[in-house]
Image 1 (tube, helix red, strand yellow):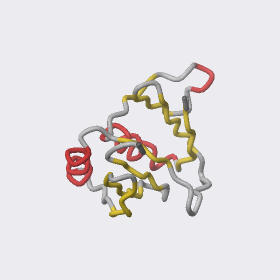
Image 2 (image 1 turned 30 degrees about the horizontal axis):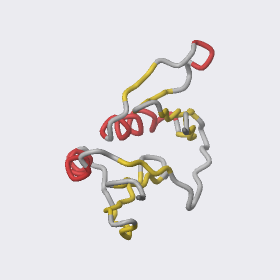
Image 3 (image 1 turned 60 degrees about the vertical axis):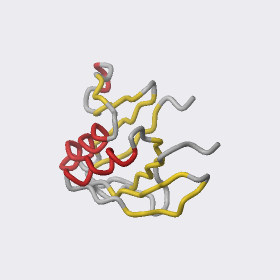
Length: 115
């Protein structure tokens, strides 16, 4: 089980990135007091930690991949909030898209996990 992934995000983009993760089913959780500068989000036991960094490292090809329930409804919700899903090749018989989030990170959304 993957417990968490941490990504660097420019402070000005933290709220917009947190909004993206909330739109795909994550909820904000309180980090420990010693890590209060970070924004933590969680869905089904997996967390994403947003670490404020003035000059964040954003990998060119690296990305997070999430299986999202209600795939089409999630894409519609993202579009309503200004997030643009870019079609990706279908693998394992399930639809996939890539969504750039504020600051340049990419998140792959999958309709189903590999069988």
